[in-house]
Amino acid sequence: MPKPRTRWQAAPHEPLQKLSENLWWVRGPIPGISFNRCMTVARLADARLVIWSPITLDEPSMAELEGWGTPAFLIAPSALHRLDVAPYKARYPAVRVLCPRGARKAVAELTPVDGLLEDFPADPQVSF
Image (cartoon, one colour):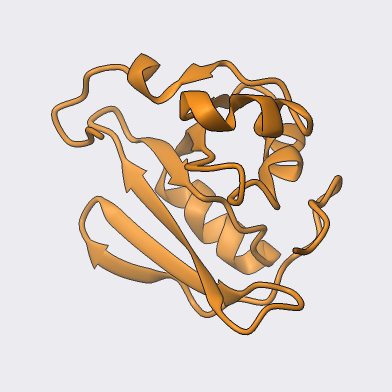
């Protein structure tokens, strides 16, 4: 398993794909492993963004993402999906880091965890 990043370093990735008006997706290889990882970004009703399983993107892609909305929630869906959690929290200090109860300890080794998935606020466009 690759070592989690501590600073922003763009990971290899494909172009952002706009799946719908409020849902984007990007895929990239996992360093040293023969399969890909995927990041999903959903836009809340107030234009804030939920980033599920973060991948550090290149600056043009990040500019596009930031133009679409403000990152507000960073979801690490498991202990295995935390490779780029710390760089995102450093880049966006106000982002709230959420994860499942079983991943909390592993995610907290890299960055403070603000809550669990069940702490995600109600939104008419995004739910878990």
